[in-house]
Length: 323
Image (cartoon, rainbow, N blue to C red):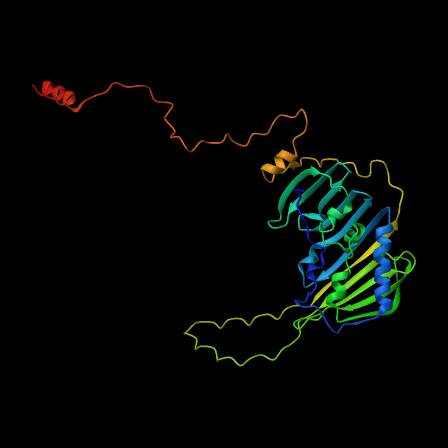
């Protein structure tokens, strides 16, 4: 599919180790709880979820909230709201699959903070599995049939059960994972409902592990009027959390996944393949350019045939004028 991925919720912010832990301490009961959560998402027919975010020390701090509605096998509506100095309620990125077509819409280009207001259209995938990398959301990955905890269990040094907590009006079992490495700590806590086993909250904290600094040469002597360089700031601790308000298997309105083009939005055509995919029966064909045959020289087409003039004739004319 030719769509714009937004890897904003992904586990990529975790301090993923470059090696697999060989001596991990994994509580079998904690592992069983995670397996129950995976099965619960696999068994859902539909899901409605509203999420609020809180972060510091990471680019994910731009996230405000999101809304997710899915219906198997392949209908999806995801709206992400991110901080925008020009919009009080944040700028929205929208992903919608109505079962036949898949649309993406971006209100703001966050690389420039300029108005974008573009959308793309592509053929819908057959199942939610195609959306597992859409944002890196653990919930979307699980809904698509994947196990979002498998990689974490391989990385974790410790997996344990912590004291239960009430979130979203439900009693939650808390699974704590130590996913740090030799450079940074990594404490991940998953809050999983005891009744429906769905995730209600996720909290992640990480900070750099201090190490002995090697001896260095003294700084060079400064020239008159030259100021010393400012010392490098130490890496900031990372905190990221979100909380879900979940409704499993809700009734779905008939037009819940209907695509409505935002006012003034225009279709972004990424490449020639995308143009081909966006053609519709009866529509005028898109023409990018006529291919040029470089094997033949290009003769000028705006010049008329002229009479051949010899140098001897020009000399004779010049002599007559002189006489």
